[in-house]
Amino acid sequence: MKRFSMFAAAAMFVCGFAFGAGPHYKHLRPMEWMIGDWVGHATLDQDIPGFGEKGDPVEIAVSLKWRANKNVIVMESIERKEDKEIDGLFITVEWDAEKKQVVTSLTNGIGDRWHGVLEFTGGDNHETTSRVVSADGTVANDAMVVVLERIGKNSMKYIFENGSSIVYKRK
Image 1 (cartoon, rainbow, N blue to C red):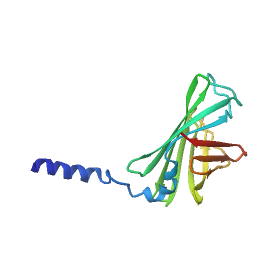
Image 2: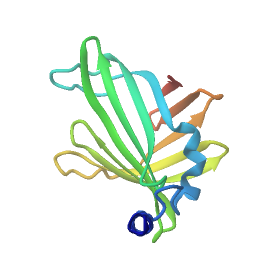
Image 3: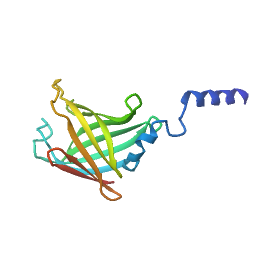
């Protein structure tokens, strides 16, 4: 029994905050209402060979989860069109303790990447400003701004710079 107690104590020491929220949770907590599964509808903003053409309607399934003892939020999306399915986005949201800000990193299914800063703009809303690096290494000159608004208990709306938007409903 003594050996088991020592093992349990060592495991708890190694795991640290394994049984509770980590130290960065307090900075991400305003996004906690988003954790779960969502679905929205949009149109493709570019041709994707073997999947669809610009303007085709797609369903977007989104899942947001806590990871690393609530120190990180991970978002994954899948885009569906008729009987086809492709990976959409992979996003991490986390606290950068050195810069004292919430940062995001996003990669899409064709290899483009965004790195940005997320700011809470009041209530459950936030705004992300990102720099885009395309799959071929080209860096966009201008930052991209995306605004998220909470619409009631079970809906949220992403608004893009070009005026387009996607409304997601909780599954």
